[in-house]
Length: 399
Ligand SMILES: Cc1cc2nc3c(=O)[nH]c(=O)nc-3n(C[C@H](O)[C@H](O)[C@H](O)COP(=O)(O)OP(=O)(O)OC[C@H]3O[C@@H](n4cnc5c(N)ncnc54)[C@H](O)[C@@H]3O)c2cc1C
Image 1 (cartoon, rainbow, N blue to C red):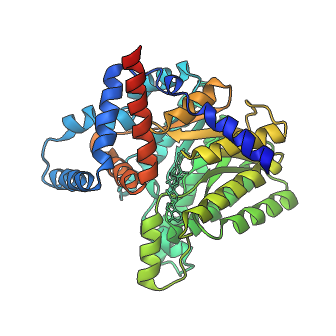
Image 2 (cartoon, rainbow, N blue to C red):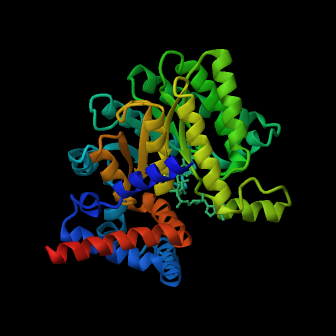
């Protein structure tokens, strides 16, 4: 235990190098980031601003320009795949890969679902020729109605129309997964609210069994704030070993904590998520450990801004003598967040990839608003971002 603690400290220190963390940021970039995080760290201002943006959107006020120059510029790559090229190139100069994440949310028509599928396929086609884009990703609710996933997850009987919708949804997913495996581009399936997640897990397992027979192309996402995910991981492992397929997993803590608790309370069912942060942290680290212990079956991506978990992953790689650039292990953060982890880990030779959201400004707004809301509610994370930015500003002033 003592050794683990000592070497965790050593690995933690790696993330303290803020010069490396901000090496590709100009003073202007840094000042913009400072203003942004300073603003959203204040819950009152953040809430007023997000309410204003929602109202302005509803009233069709021309706010695109201001959003594009501020929060969008910090957290997004561009409005299209091509417009994101500068971000992709810039990250790659620091040996950080990109995951192009089409982030148009809240869409609900057949046309939107097909467009999201085509965008994902376009991102796979781009990735197949470029080593700086090691993964693709999609969000299942971009491909069908939320209400349908909810009904499937609750095992409710579907109407005839819903059965047809379900088939279309499954066809879209299969189409994306097939393109991914044929073009040798690994693919993440994002996780969402627990009341639609059964439907997503079900199809993700079918896709893994179908396409992960020789190598790992399909990755599902595990949210470790859920109190049943370690058992789910053990079940998956058993299934994969018995049925001879590989598992791909992106491990995250989970983005819908407050909604999960509220819904469980309102509908009076047992809360599906941990309510103590430490329990989530323990399960996250347990899942990382299980994945690395079973590296011959599982490929893993640690989607986290948490320094303890990132340091633990480095420790686990050392313990198990797995090389830093083993393609079965990736670190991942969102664009504009935790650059101290991404840039320092990449500099040390670990595999690092950033989610780079893209899409038209107004379509990406729900993602940006969630970012602001999440960040305001996670005081620790925002504190870390701001402290790092302030320290780098001080360091530059001294030099
Ligand atoms: C590359 C990447 C991909 C992602 N993909 C997804 C995805 O597909 N689906 C998804 O849901 N999220 C996704 N996320 C977001 C992720 O789930 C987290 O919300 C976010 O990363 C913050 O968690 P953290 O591990 O970075 O660290 P931390 O800042 O240490 O943890 C914050 C998290 O801890 C949990 N938490 C907070 N308070 C409590 C409490 N009282 N009790 C128990 N748990 C608590 C919550 O999950 C919260 O988000 C992704 C994140 C990244 C970086």
